[in-house]
Length: 107
Image 1 (spheres, one colour):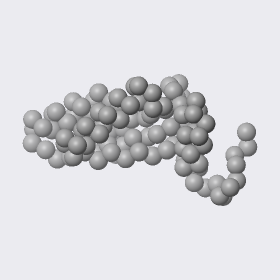
Image 2 (image 1 turned 90 degrees about the vertical axis):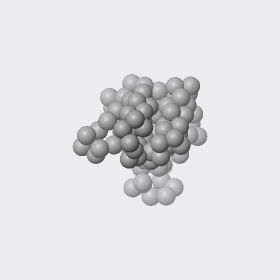
Image 3 (image 1 turned 45 degrees about the vertical axis):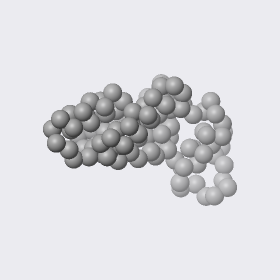
Image 4 (image 1 turned 90 degrees about the horizontal axis):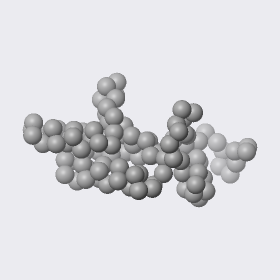
């Protein structure tokens, strides 16, 4: 899956509130890291809408959006990239950086 971390951009109050309203639609705030976070398990219609909202926030407000492939947590019951084996393989390899090149995980 893709973990999305969003850092807000400084802004005057009306723009700040607009920025937060956009982010609240698709992400949750993590007070420990002072960032907004979301997880995408698939680039279906809902996933594309989340991405569009994040890119709009970056374009309009200057937020920083970082995507990182991560292993699917045990508690996750949403969609995953496993429906597309090519994308799933790339994301799994990116999330498992400690594995030697060419070594496949045991199924």
